[in-house]
Image (tube, rainbow, N blue to C red; front, side, top):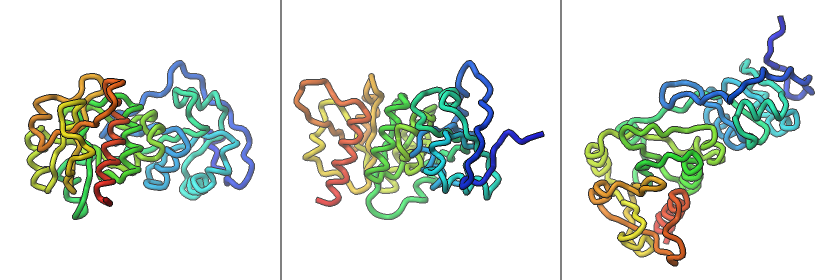
Length: 277
């Protein structure tokens, strides 16, 4: 019986694969943090996972026209007996649940979510910036936050106690590779998390729509955690009051505020600018 996976050498022109079985719904992503697989899509998301964690790659589906661009990945698959399959665009739509797959879908092992103590032990000395997400849930916002965090070299994304937020295929695609560059960190109870962070030299900055110090004029600490609120409700006021400083992004007043992903990019840029000013 023929193996349904095509492991031919990528330098050869592979035959067109049999279309994948029809499905009524896309495969559901695995639960975060239990070692299950994640279905990635998008060229940069898939290549970033391969470049950072090649051993995590489990299966690849791609359009024939994308073979030249994916040669290093496909050669690695051949050498390590990892299956890849050339399929049609419609098959990728079903596998990814979207038309925005950019011609490639990959099943990969999920990256582990770190405990706070483990993450702190791994940090370098000197300036470090991290983001504490207090209620952010939209996968596209998460992806945009990860992209900005990777661009400005943030050290981690800290998830509040009880958070179910995790990397999805949609978030990873929007992150354009940033999901592999910024580790996720699970926080303990709020008071304990704050105590551990402060002991490691971090200050916590609550980010408020209004009422905080002008972030463009504030003196930002070298080791800083920005605490970002939920998309609609903003951040918890008790949590904001418990932080070491409160900052806001001034604007024209033409709109109420920036959305959380846009605000994050501004805040990250301001911290990075303060390091080189």
